[in-house]
Length: 348
Image 1 (spheres, rainbow, N blue to C red):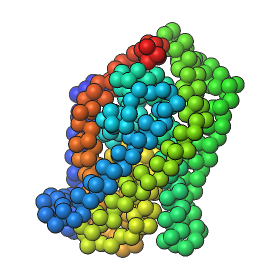
Image 2: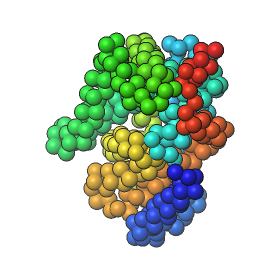
Image 3: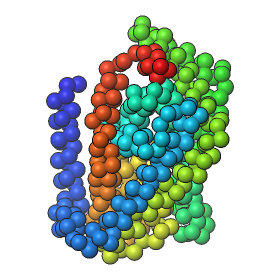
Image 4: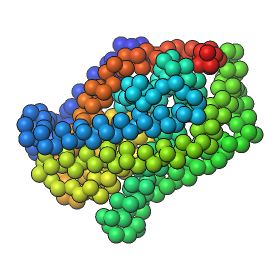
């Protein structure tokens, strides 16, 4: 597909999103009402800046957690110089489909600090698993605080998350088995059999990735990383308390954790197909409208839009030095740079 086609798809998608938002927000003055909200000094000082503060603290903890996960691989970096790579990768995931940032981040880590590509990828994958585990825990605890019992509606919200967690557990049990890894590498080789170059490289990549993932899971650092994951998501999901005050709506902290926990978990699953920013916005609008009684589509869409703006503006400011480099790295990966050469560079 040519670049012109991608640009056209992006432009049409943006027009449709803006039109949908304008129609949804007509009860409060259309999409221009968001501009008025963002230029109101009271809103900025008392509600939007605290939301940005929570966002910033969460991403500082994310950088520390990633540094912890990379410790078993003798990574030369520290949370400060890994921070731009992390934020740039997450930015790519928010604006591009197929979780592009999850591939670009370990690529740049290898280029800048010499860490094996498979080791960086294993740390990113394991971080996502810890994210889901933390979100499920937050949803269970906050749901119990709101409803008193885990039954009915709460159970239906949790079921998909629990099933996903069981699938992750089964996968990580299997990946520790050498016979299963060998079987998967042979399957991968058969899938890429038409390509003589990839036929030999892909099985080797699968085996190296499995080995690195086992190293990360089996290390003591995983426990510390999980302990960091819970406050990370508490800080991120608490933003709803402040954003709702812009609309004179009182949302308790348990409600904020419950609603955004569900929307972020569902949105990140859908981000396999859509840009994470779009998928989270859609699920957040639906979740806010359903879970917080009395909230119309306009209020729900407005809050979801403001939360998305906090994310996009925050990611742009924090990750600006790295976004261009991360995008270049992703394009080079798309150009099918040989995996064996990636590993040789990383080892050197």
